[in-house]
Image 1 (cartoon, rainbow, N blue to C red):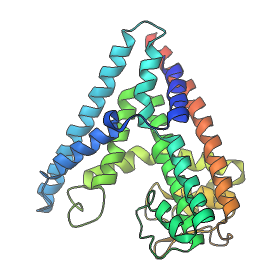
Image 2: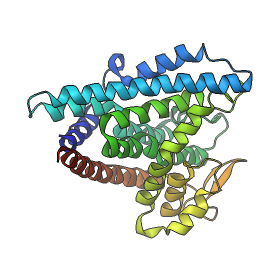
Image 3: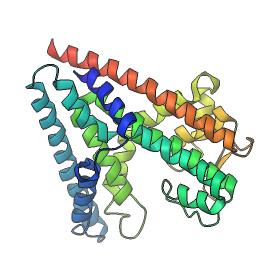
Length: 303
């Protein structure tokens, strides 16, 4: 059932991109985080860390319980229906087509309407200030976001599904969303969001490195990839970004923060297209691998 469920989810993602917003679990997660966030204090530090951690744990436990409930309900259905239900539940926990479409949209905006349109398009997928970015910097930001979000939105959810089924994938998606909402180093969330940020770091340790290896392939040595990834302040984001920089031979930089592939060429339209092709193929390959592993895990659990 688990292997077929991955196939169902991938087909739904490719065909429809996202389920309706009203039933999307990420939207419900966001509502919980907003509600809980109003009740978590920002200080004193110790109290903020504990309160934020408890609120995070309550949300993660709910996500796990929801995934477990769906899995058990699906297991009681007739055999042909089981993987369909599981696949529909897995579908909103990853976002391959949406990621590819958003990054492709940045290049289309640049090509058709100029830098201002490109800035507006890339602002949808990055958190940095885009108001003064050049066309090259817009493309850099788009490629960086492609690498980082391929790990967060595709590889990690499928990895955790392969390891622990719907409950594990649901917990990851909650954790990643919580990090996006609470994980910033600001006065409000520096302490209250600490557990959310650290949990996301831990859950992404393996997927980020797996993404880097998938994107780098045989053309990028592990030692070189690890050295470049270490140039970023994040323990995880540098791996897929560095892999793209080295694989494509381009320079990716965030002023005052990091430079990856320092001797590479500026990112051009052809590089964005190459990055998208690579992300598409590696995403499909990962889905196949996740399906195989999930199927083996399920069969092993029945013995």
